[in-house]
Amino acid sequence: MKKRKVRAYILIGLALGLFVIQPLAISLHMYDMQGDNGNWWKYLLASYQQEVSSWDLDQAIIKLLFGLLGIALALMFMVRQKIFQLTTKSNKLEEIKELIGAGENQQVEFKSTLRWDLRQFKPNKALEDVVAKTIAGFMNTQGGHLFIGINDNGNSLGLQEDYASLKKPGRDRFVQYVMQLVSTKLGINYCALVGMSFYQIEGLDVCHLEIKRAHSPVYLHQDDRSHFYIRTGNGTRELDIPEALNYIEENLNSR
Image 1 (cartoon, one colour):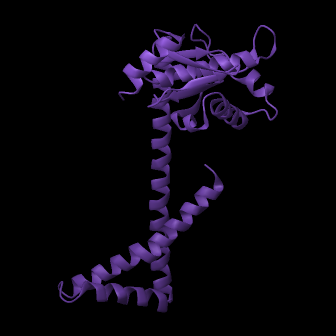
Image 2 (cartoon, helix red, strand yellow):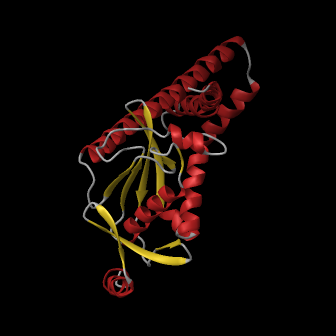
């Protein structure tokens, strides 16, 4: 855990103990001593005034104890939150592994790389078009999951070659590049339909694109033409103009 975050929780806990727990405890005690008579709010105000004005040894010890109590509660909350995050992440990873283990289908597709040609050992723009085509196909059908860094057999290859092929190597630049690809090839308004996350599988980075279906036709802009793709089985198929018009009328315009 980052030290800055721990310090922040300690300060929050200290404030909680001194300015919330202590006044509440003292005011409730005073209210109980008076037989639950009178206005509790007055006792609460009196407890705040006592806390500010009184700094003798006994009061200092009481403040220290309430401060420590607040800090303990804040740190317990932080630890529980961290455990919840780790558990959620672990469960999500298991779901991802199950998706990959089931293989490619109508809503799952694997790509070994985004732009690095494993045969020519250099970047290949044509591979980017294939990724964009797949994303468009998912958007025009029922949505789906695209994994980059996984080969056709479901084995993890990682993203190191893709990372290294970028001007600024690394995960952050990879995210920007994918979103730029969607924006350029499909349209900037469709970036919102693509959710990106990364997982370590077999010690290698794998990118997961969770793609939502669109409510209007999505075209791939390539070679000065607009291409229309859909998912069929475990592949992506381009429709000619009559097929595309019929498909759009039956499946997209009615959504």
